[in-house]
Image 1 (tube, rainbow, N blue to C red):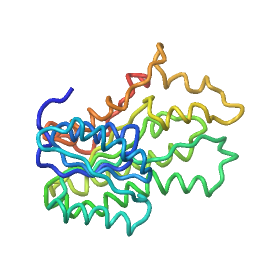
Image 2: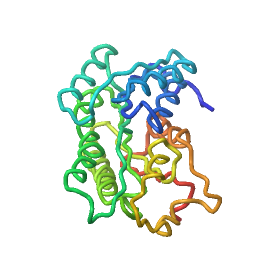
Image 3: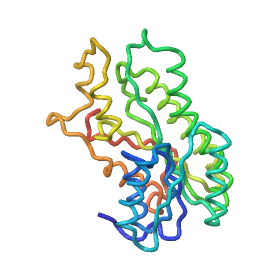
Image 4: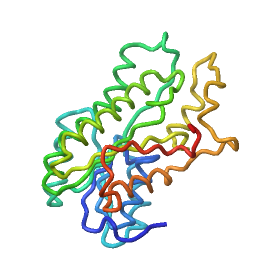
Amino acid sequence: MTFASRFQDKNIIVTGGASGIGRATVIRLVSEGGTVLAVDRNADGLRETLELANSVADYGGGARSVLASITDEIEVRHVVQDFVREQGGLDVLVNMAGILRSTHTTETSFEDFMLILQINLGGTFLFCREALPFLLESQGNIVNAASTSAFFGHAYMAAYSASKGGVAALTQALSREYLNRGVRVNAVAPGGIGTPMVVAQAQAFPEGTDFSLYAHLTRPDRQLGEPQDVAAAIAMLACEDGAFINGAILRIDGGTHG
């Protein structure tokens, strides 16, 4: 379901666009008229995203893609600047790219800990930094990907939780910094969403996992949310319907965290 041409003539970058919430967001924004650049390192996933998004394109919208690493400063700069040069501006940045791993904290290497922070937090920071000059021109906005893990404690995910807590703090710091300059910055905090990353993680918990520690993450019917549920919230935050929402961390978990 779409509401109208809320993103007609809007230029948008979505990271993590090859699957999951990123893909659902590309499809949603294109269906509402947006011109969307999907960024990822998964070429096959990006091709499928483009096929799906362009099959539902409406109001002049469309999707394109670029292969890039979100932690490479030069690549990120080129992705943003090339898209702006081609389109004439940038209106929305959606940072959905990320990585999830679960290990016992005592068995987590510092290298793995820093890798997760580099991707989830560092990549978000780089795209925000490079996009902000152009978003100031357009009076645009940013939507980042936090997580309920940042606030409610997800066992065996110390690095992931720390990275998402950093994203939440970064979001609120930027929203304050640009409060009087016309750029809004918000984040979504998904809970149990049936993405490929979450499904893969369900099969990769470390030996000895106490699954009772995750009882608060699922509904009594054990139903997970869908990527489209999060994409709908992102669309609301990123369009004029969310014009008076700034610095918010929107929890999307079906009420599982109370």
